[in-house]
Length: 146
Image 1: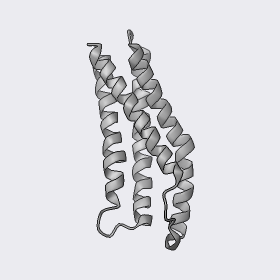
Image 2: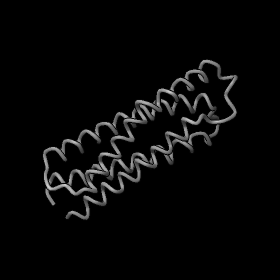
Image 3: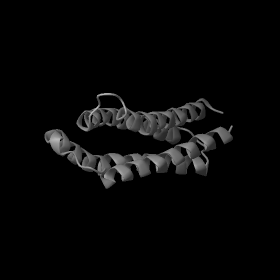
Image 4: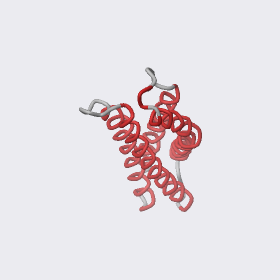
């Protein structure tokens, strides 16, 4: 395994851990904390997901650079990275703006919080699941190339 492959492997699993930790653990649990209201949770979520997506973008760029400078990458590596990066782009460019509009409305009128989640939340989670599968594919394919 080359240094580039080792760094790419580590980066893919660190990115995967961040998605699991924030999207599937922190995000749902924060609403169960004592004293957390929907508007407060949404405000925290907005900050946390903006930061998460920025760091994810850095990981995606680093992995793309690793692929560009390295050689002998497997098809699984290329597909995993491509799908993970594409899922992130969809989340940031298409889904988060819809979620931000809804959050703006809730924060502007906290007394009229909608009873149900928006479908955009489900789309975001769906793309997180796609990203998780892609990152597992990416990391596993890198490990198998040893």
